Amino acid sequence: VQGIDEELHQASVSKVGDTFLMLFESNRFSAKPLNGDLRLAVSPDGYTFRRVHPHTPMVSTGDKGMWDSNLLVGTSYSMQQVKDEVWIYYFGCSRFFTEWPKDYAVVPDLRASFFYPVALGLATLPLDRYAYAAGPGHLQTHPLEIGQCGVWLNADGERLTVSALDRKGRSVSSGRLGRERVSTVYRRVEWNDSSPAGTLRLRVSLPEGSRLYSLRC
Image (cartoon, rainbow, N blue to C red; front, side):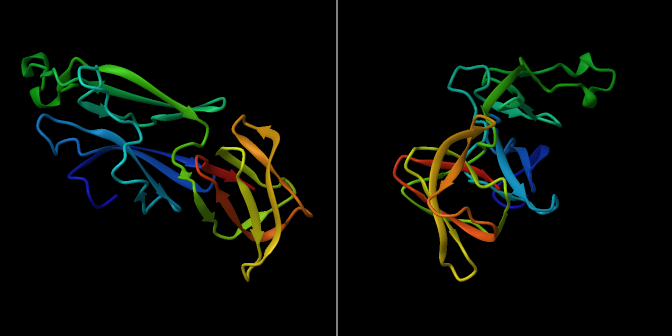
């Protein structure tokens, strides 16, 4: 991940659907005192990543005086799916820290931790809600293969509408969110006309106050 950060550390990569998600330590050594949070990047192939909301933390440091107000450190496999949630494990320290004495290690430069006190933290979020598009506005997808399972949206709000578009951008069907759910957060789109199938684009209309996190086909 190249760009705005002075240094990157401890990337944890998970595959969600066809996308690789990277949780990484951002700007760990760019400020004095040390300060760094955890941010998100995505990749279609696992090699080339781009930031998601590059100036917004995925897991932010805590408020002033809290145990994680200064520096967050990820683990090699930080993100774990637990039922209908994603659990993110990390280490943190406050602005009141010191370095472990070098004399505590057989090899001073290889001591296990440079800072203390350090505590383990856990951040949770609903399944597949790593980022979102907020209304009011419209979002149009790349071509998607829509099969018999239909279209499911992971969204907040009751007034979202969806249109299925053919290659020429013409609407072949429209619908809205129904009551049927899967994995708690996904709701099936109920179509006003016949259910669309094949390679189509989806155009989601987001009224004010609504959010779209992800979708399944």
